[in-house]
Length: 385
Image (tube, rainbow, N blue to C red; front, side, top):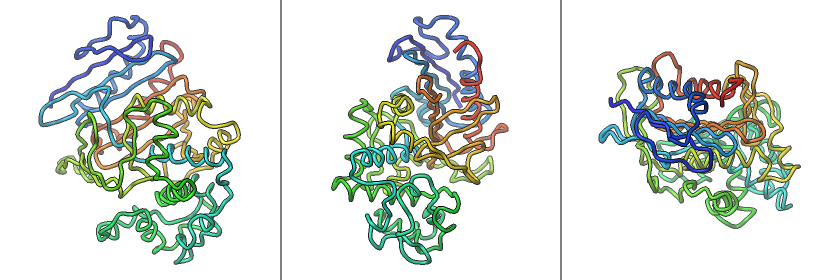
């Protein structure tokens, strides 16, 4: 496989194009040296990890650094680019939770409202009771509602992928626990949250995300596809999957075209590294939500069986790094695309990364191991960047 690294570093918003292995001339030498550990990790992810390609953007105040390794397209050898869009999986949940909290700030709903109030009869059957599940429980995964993506057989049988059909799959199974008594990651929670947004506003979830977040923040590469649209609009990398087979020799499939309705509010969005850093920087910096809702979003509960050293708020998570630093953001994984966006609590320092494959060799269990190493390289430094 063709190996390639490219990076740019400027002291102002936006970056200049740089050739393979080059640093933009506007980068101070000390700053360029500070990103050397991140550059090495990008190379290792491709050379040792066997991934098709990886990209990362680092923000330090008004300075950006962008780097890539590997390729966007294994057939043509095209390099990954800063403007490339990719599927962000569960990072979509942060956008959905933000819209819910904005509606709460406007008095259009309350986090104490129940699923039954907004969606009568939707959370019912097999001991599910929507009257005992409130919106806060949906957003922090303490509802106990079964995760519909754990029933692959039912998903494969389903001819329609409406939000209602996804919820029906979930409630055909017993709850994982009684509402409020535990924690379990469930995509069903965010499908229900998306349905509540549409009921409260009378508009499509995709429109609410665009009007409330993408357009005001200038996130030109960020959107939720409409319906079952399988394409990624605009420049993008190919997405490669081994369908979660761990055998190094497992066949690789191209999953770039994907029916987004299967994931919708739980993980159907598309974005770019720059857009993700801008969104999370504004969110962490308190520039999107009023103080009360900001406090709600970042009030966490302990997680179980999820990311190591993580706690979960309302659509966001905190992760403790081995050096003792804590970063805030969210990760997402879909077929052929794994992403991470985390930063310091004030939002001035951010890292967004994406790999266009869903496997990892070379001593990492999965791409999360690479992302964790990237965060350590950035946030566990005491000098330089």
